[in-house]
Length: 224
Image 1 (cartoon, rainbow, N blue to C red):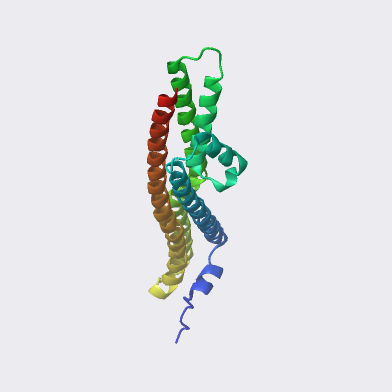
Image 2 (image 1 turned 180 degrees about the horizontal axis):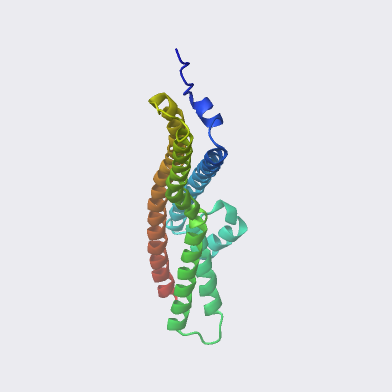
């Protein structure tokens, strides 16, 4: 009786050809990187939402804008994107007001541009490194497929020298090749889910910042 081929996961990985092992290693590295991004960006978004809510509460309590601006500048690390938009808009508002004979339209237009630029700057900061998740999600299945195709090619090349091919001879090679596809999917699926979730959070924060900028501009417009 012929010995049964060892089809354990560890044996298939260690017994794979060098190119297939290189593909597996690359996919494992991509998976670890994507998981680091998931935890890191998750903490960033969680902190941004929490700090925005805290600042929003302080702002609409009717606090004096000058004192609120001073508090934001003194401890900027405690405040989130909404506070940064507020600080940029109020700073430009004060700058415009201090010019000689400022017109109401000039003050409002300058403040509007500052609010818009600050909003875009905060969104760019929050979006930083998110394309990395999209890259892992899109390329990992294809990298895994490359390893699978290479492994299957090696299996069939090995069968060319065998007079009669059997399933026992083909199965180990195909199994080790398919592991590359499985690892590629394991790397891609969490990255896709996390990327879509972060994009939804990013859209909500963007809407919140734009709404706040418009409401804050209306307040400053009355003071202009």
